Length: 281
Image 1 (tube, helix red, strand yellow):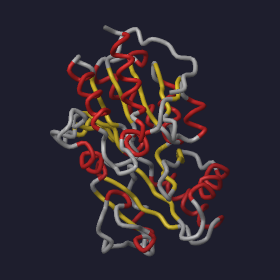
Image 2 (cartoon, helix red, strand yellow; image 1 turned 120 degrees about the vertical axis):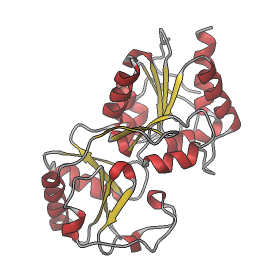
Image 3 (cartoon, one colour; image 1 turned 180 degrees about the vertical axis):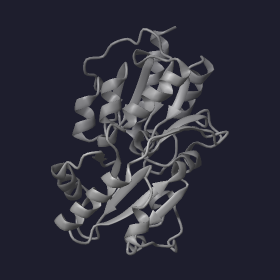
Image 4 (tube, rainbow, N blue to C red; image 1 turned 135 degrees about the vertical axis):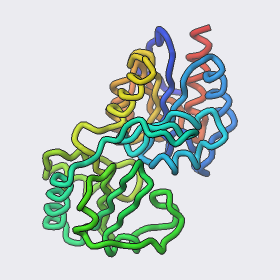
């Protein structure tokens, strides 16, 4: 494990973890050692919380039956909920005018760009005509590839929890570069390791979602330990008391973190949680 600028958390009250590339190993499971570390923290009264670009239903599929099945943040910070009860605490949506301007300008800059509007705490999936054919089974947490498609006007007619941009031949990194250059007001664009660009309302990130959850539970940023590996984790890793990037993470995540641990396949999360709990004995 490589450490950079480590420090003790004066009091650990919350552990927030990204899901893909962080909590889940390459075979899309939680390792026994990592789960045991979360259980040990939970047993000490520490709130353990998944925070992901996934929608709540998809997060729940990954953590069901574990101590992580409780409060969660989905859609890159746009929705907070309780996975056990389906209670939705907040939804921060992308306005119609902002998403319409972004899609219009993206299609002018990169013809063939397709989009999806995700709504209703992640339950509603509204893809534009031509989008479903770009999907692989499991994309967006949806195994079926016979989904209905809609006219663009209908896709953009209501605010989105998250808007998705995708192209059949242009990579997500290239699309992201175009979207960042356009800098459409009201939009925050990022990627998470999936083959598409993810758009939230301006100011909506995992940081903002985690901040709202911390306020709800009376927890300070300095009392939070967080794990991540990708661009959409950067704001969160900078905000918390101690941010940890996975060894398999992107350079942006490594640079934002206080510490770099082992990879998701080498129990990187468990190594840090075990150490922090021992320090707080």
